[in-house]
Image (cartoon, rainbow, N blue to C red; front, side):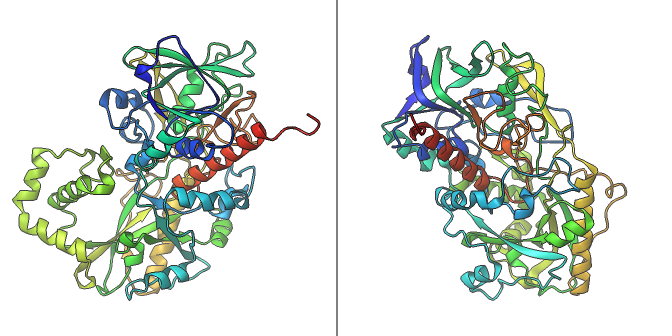
Length: 542
């Protein structure tokens, strides 16, 4: 059932077997997986079923490191979480991502990719991805289109990897009715976690203190608790809960909030002398058919040159596609599309909320002819009108303990300290991006396709000014068998606590280059399976 926390009596206690904090992809996946297994579940979501700005403001914080999105714009705080702004990209992580790579400090997962195989299969179903087949040749045969072609790269240097797409699935709306009908599940909306309370030794969580912006206060008691509130908020909640342990829960070794990772996104122009080149599979030509390819570094080359994982898209550019009028038109079309209707922000210029400014509207009208031509060319994407290409690099970021989330001195509406994000990268991150582009440039030249525009002075060592991320907040409560190097163990249980678990991208030890949502769902299903088994299967001899 779905309950509004504002209708709960103050000072009351809600009891369940499992309490899950956060109604995004991870929390909803777990709640659905735990239905009908003899356990009662309480799913707590800070927002309602639609965006409310007072609630969204609770995400506001401060960036003090590399330029990053405003924290109340790169996290969505209502039922469905960031799936309300998800682009739908899906691909499992690569086997090398799970390895302890000698050239990547702090790398390695406590299990191999094979551990997630069955959970990935079910994650595809939850994400409504029609196929889990990522074989490039079979994907081309599936498309059966003359422009669905892979570039003949040297396989020892570059490979073409297939990505699939969710519609995208807005978990809060797609699964709302299932949450409502579940008899053993209570989904409580507008419920904000104010504190995680433990026993005197901080070994067991006893309850969650919960509040609403309208002033209601109540408690949630459970046998097991799961934080699934996102990469920044998971760390913040642990740091805020410091009444027993001064540094916060799970933070005996000062690891909570460290290793904050994103996927750095950069753009470089490609000069292409051959206008008839068909590269639609690497751009957006087949997005409507839910298939796309990325250019990636071969595993052998990563090992030989001590590089991180790396991938890139090759986007065709047409007449007027760099004009402000076209960018404003694109923003308008996306904001009106059915798949983007729940998205209050768009991650493309003009940045910010969906509402257009008068200046942007003027840009569309002032050169309506060029804007219209750009729209027609974008719709049909004819090869003969390609004016060039943009290479969008999306490298992996190495785990960096100095890249972190901490608490700021400013406070939110509940009087709780807001988050402060210090996004930092390491030399290997930029070296991987530059070297990946050098290799792509060499291959484009070898194939007589074109070349990359030269880097601006200073960009070899430093990131370009237009560095962006993917709204992928990862690694802040990382998984590691050693509590000195991670916050949770291989089963996602917080070290030192018997009944507190964490779900979501914050447990990633390394991130690879695949967008994280599919893996977030797979890990959530794995954790749900672990809890279900440990709580319902009696011990031998009991």
